[in-house]
Length: 79
Image (cartoon, rainbow, N blue to C red; front, side, top):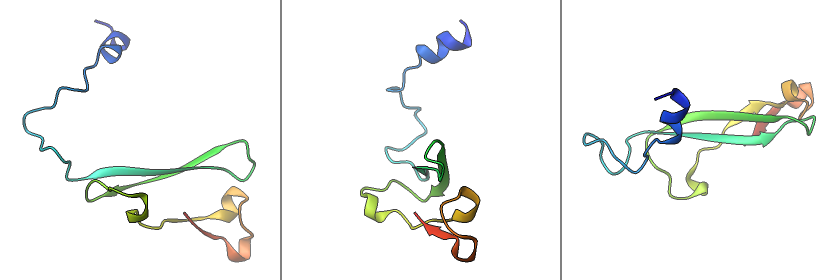
């Protein structure tokens, strides 16, 4: 099979036997529109396990001056 065919036919319902029902760690990713309004930005981090509610996600920050979303003298943006 070709790699594309393998991907198209990938069965995600099969779970390897050595995994528990809930993963120990997950990757959470914030995605937002950049300062130009024409680009997407993102930031990801590994968390200790599944999150049941968005309010349970930790606050993240980034330097808004590098994305034209904040002035250089006050550039910390909280996600």
